[in-house]
Amino acid sequence: MNDVTQAKQIWIVSDGKPGHLNQSRGLAEAIARQREVVISEQPPMSRLQALRLCFSGFLPTLDDKPALLIGAGHATHLTLLALRRLYGVPAVVLMQPSIPMGFFDLCLVPEHDQPPSRPNIIPTRGALNRMQPGAKTPGSGVVLIGGPSKHFDWDEPRVLEQVESLLAAGARDWLIGSSRRTPASTEQALAALVGERFVPAANTGADWLPEQLGRAEVCWVTEDSASMVYEALTAGCRVGVLGPADRVDNRLSRGLEGLASQGQITRAPDWLMQQLSNEHGAFNEAARCADAILKREWL
View 1: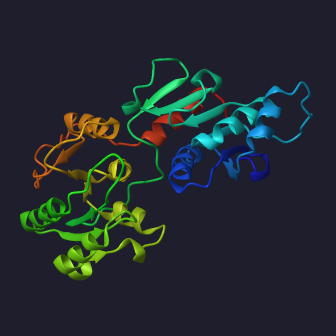
View 2: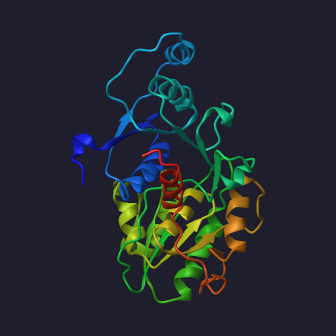
View 3: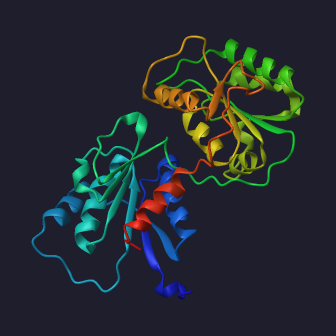
């Protein structure tokens, strides 16, 4: 292999938001599993600085440069284009950009956003992530509880009722975790229900979720936490969704409905997961997109 100093560089333009960085890192690390690369993070430029660089008539001569630019989040878009022009290298944007998609070399857009069919657009099943399958512990299961969001109403009594039904349906070593959005009343009720098997979000670190999803055979997620559904699938879990009696209709719920129709996930009250298909293969959108990038011979 080449020495690290000769490895090609991937620059992630990061706005500092964990969710956006998780997506960019997921793609970059999937590439790194197939090519020797150096991954680094760059902050976005100011809007004025990026615009000046985009439209400047003079560009400096630079010896060192990245081979690929990656970014997620609206605050990264102008910087991606400015660096693309400065270095003459491809720019990949994750999520639907606020700038016309034709300006980017590749756009990785969740299919629930209904992107147009173009050569520089790849629809993805949900947002990319960093998850990897681990060694599954027989009989293990994890339940991930979210909370109120702008896309979903929070029905605490129904969530607690579904968790009780799930726990009663099968003898499994369950662990239940909450999120930063989970109401205090829901956390208190879960602690009373399962005792030490409940782990509040305040007691978890950055590695807790990857570790739990890596080991768990089964994962149930509340419908508001759509990103965790895709993370659990990527980690190789059998996935079920807890949700309200009345289904909402928005882009996130339509994405989950598509997974359910394909047998990728199941919904409450299918506690024994009989609706899951055994025919689909591994779920790893970051790896699929990394393959598409490598086929373009940008690295």
